Length: 334
Image 1 (cartoon, rainbow, N blue to C red):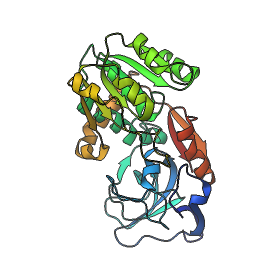
Image 2: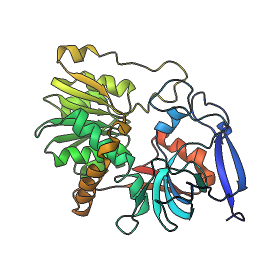
Image 3: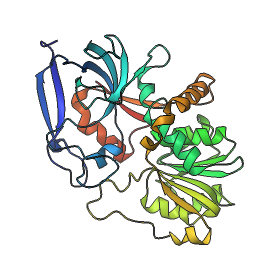
């Protein structure tokens, strides 16, 4: 394997505002061989997620930041091509923190095997990966929807939002998605079975919420923060639950994050707002994955992947998340 070349993107500087190619160092080096307890993985697909922007920032968070000079953190799937670890054999396909590179060499901490004969590999980064786990637990555990509830999802055509909305439908809820553009809104209704959609790019969100949620919002699954969070807070129902899963509208701010001005709606409606980090549920991933796989096999859950080819496109492809260009789960084919 030493004749192979490993292309890598390393974090060169912490971004201020939007991420640019200049924030990374592109490096090529020879591929090494595993030491005892290590594996070598040829990476096939990488998951591009809004959380990656937060991982580049210095400061306290739910996970340490990527260090300057370190390979950019990313989840991925790939094939084991050499192994000195008793639990992983050559030919196994694995999911784990592989990094933005062609090959991963190291200890497989937190890695687990996946079966490409049961589902396409990119699906293990979407509905059957962290994306699906995030949607599942954030909605069902934190949002606690009941049949008949009105559930509103922001970023609804994105990776997590599209899955969360479908799960809410499976649980008997009325589901309204907020998304950008007519095509995405039609996709939510025609393909995913949402009951309503609000196009934040072409209509007033508060007016759309009044139209689609005349009795108020029982569960709000927030992926974007900012003005849309404020708008939904103004339409909360009694005892509503607000799930803070993400805030993509705020990640590239050069100023302080914009907090909710309408937070007193929580008091008036005796509502609850709670943050969510998926790794808190790691011990339950197996059972949730089985249920999700069952829904996919039955055709009751759909997963859409937006696959872009070429490791070299990484910085520009990542930006699709923040411009709203991606349609479904954004995956980079290495």
